[in-house]
Length: 522
Image 1 (tube, rainbow, N blue to C red):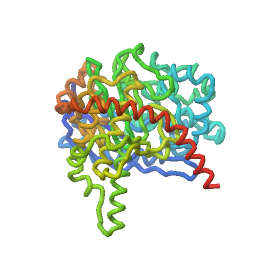
Image 2: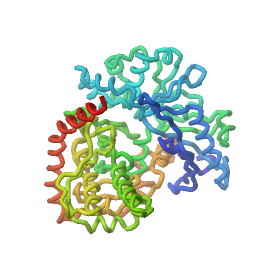
Image 3: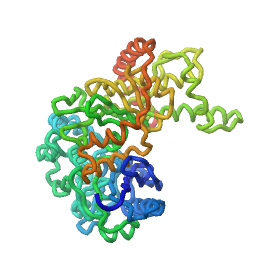
Image 4: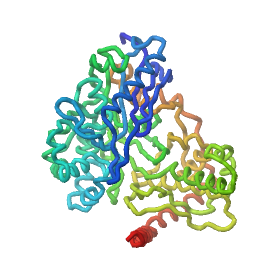
């Protein structure tokens, strides 16, 4: 390949926008980041300024280019990924119609509930592989059709976050295969489905859906005004990556030629993915939850279930302890309690209680959908101390991961763990014990940006396919496996069965509690 030897991956997440530079061997060279600002509205909306998002992205690129010894001339190409779902409307001149609706936006929740009760829902689910929820562009467009149709009349294109950035960089209106089929398509055909669009009642919005561009095969050039804004050279190839969940899975170790790996992302939420090597092996569960996302490979998919709250449960426990200490006149922060916590948790008694990690006010979305689901300990006794309760919380995250994996069809032969909780030795060990399989962590810190760059390297011919890219970049950097403790696997198997049974039994109680609370507010 002619030109430079540096690839830049842009990962525009919900909280942070990062631009990361890698060499051709997958070594991270430098990064630059900015906070990603959004606004929560009183009506449940969560919006983001589209122009500012590009300006912040451009600022990270300028800062990154300044850190490169060869400057802009060393950049071989740029790949972009970003937060999924949401609706970013632009008019024919490329100007925002309204602030972007993020995946956090809850205004269309009632419409999502309507759709899940419709007679055609199962057919929609089986075609897209995706359970409908309030995050999705389809539901956002239905809400806008009912309440602000003038926005749709002005709009020419409905982007997602990364698609908007790609447009600003290249002038091309496009969407990647993973996000296109996730909401509006047939995952088997890797294309839009007119049947799905009609079933959603969105034929009038079909014109807003941009062409599908697969970054493995196609790139566009950085336009002159974007070059001036970013400090890059005009004409630099730009690749549209897949959605951030997929790119993080690619950079985190989901891809392997054997196809037996899984990937868990334990951040604020928990994402649990199983690599599926063909459409016939996709498992669509009876609850209509979870989703199928296309991987950047031939006939390859990520079967995904996502529990709403993962490390949020750990943060809650730490904040609770810090608050009690502060009330007693002892100033402590989370980081103070985390020091040495792994050792205390691993020394604590297993199964001091069964913990259901539904700490989010939004309830649960996988592997069952229940907005009333709430967290709780079952079986606590007076002998349980803070390390015992924290161990129960980590066990609960392990049970939630297993519940999600089983809903995808089976627990993978090995799980690659990424996200903030991957740094915890106790979490890695407990997850291995509960799942009964080895757990590894990846060696690429910025897995999402790396996954996008790996797609670009396939497009540019540096690798024959994404599997080859994974073998070169990811596999050599995987940690040694954390193996299950053979003595704990049987009791955790039995405890998981109890955890799952309790989930079913508690659902009426969660609904009754919600009704009681509503009565108190009237």
